[in-house]
Amino acid sequence: MSQQLGTLEDLPDAYRADMAAAGVAPLWPMMRNVLPHGRPSAVTRPGFWDYGKLRPLLLRAGELTPVEKAERRVLVLCDPGRGAGAMQATASIYLGMQLLLPGETAPAHVHTPSAVRIVVEGQGGYTVVDGEKLPMEEGDLVLTPGGEWHDHGHEGSAPVVWLDALDLPLFVYLEGSYAVEGPLQAQRNRPDASQVEYRAAGLAPTRRPGAGARRYPMMRYPWERTRAALDAMAAHAGGDVAELDYVNPETGEDVLPTMGFTAMRIGAGQVEAPPLRSCSGAYHVIAGRGVAKIDGARFEFGPKATFTAPVFADIRIAAEDDCYLVRVHDRPLQEKLGYYEERAR
Ligand code: GTQ
Image (cartoon, rainbow, N blue to C red; front, top):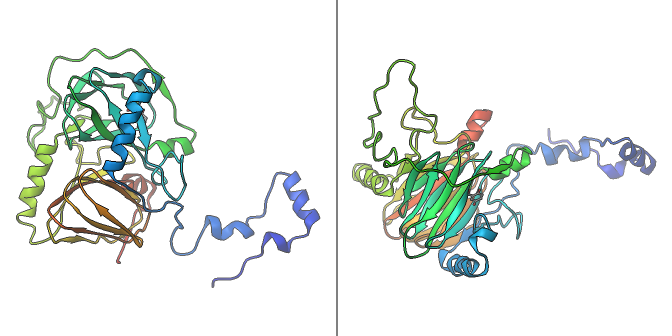
């Protein structure tokens, strides 16, 4: 079955030159590169970022580069498989640590990629999306979906840091990535939808016929609620790891078109060993310590660490104490394309 295919070197030099001059190339020497057997071959390699190492670099960026000179003051987490400078953490997922100092604002813009913020440190930060002011407390998940105006501000007294997850690499690949800048938004004088319409799981506002919900009805998922939900679930999980999907409260679907998010609680002594998944992923540690083994790489993690897993990675996460993590993945994209799968380990 696995036949040896002809190589470029098998072909006469003159023929190769004629093909190149005509703007064509033979498929067969490249066949296994573009269509490997059985499973994809990943360029992405497992990555690990300790917050203790990133934090001083980020604060130094705060001294070196005023926010006006940065638009967004971010250190990008570069996939080791693509090397220093790679503007991505996996094939489809971009991750960056963003710093906002007290009193600063990051100007309003709108872009084609979608973003999610996971708050790492600090109090008083907020994001305004389409006029809705979303407070950013540690562990909160805040959406800024593609096509929605957003700006960031900071009313607190100490640095605020959050992890950005964007589907930017996909949009760059598609030659579809661009932004438009605008003035800071007027803020509606009311709390965000998580505190008004969507206070409780399973309840959504009653609507008149034809009066639909917003496409992104709730753009902030307070960590306090997520953690309480994980604890309640873990108490009755019979020793299983508790994992919850972040969903659109009106539709039950993934919060964004291409990226999905889950919250996990791996209890002390438990090991999370998921099936091999066709999606890539990133884990951000909200609390707890443990050891992650991803495709043979071994990472000792603590609070605020971030690590990544390529497609079909062999993942084992052993918790030393109770661990809370947020997982970012591209399963929604793969499901839309019709190829998401899980294989037994
Ligand atoms: O906060 O809007 O990390 O536009 C990269 C691009 C953050 C943002 C990033 C962005 C933003």
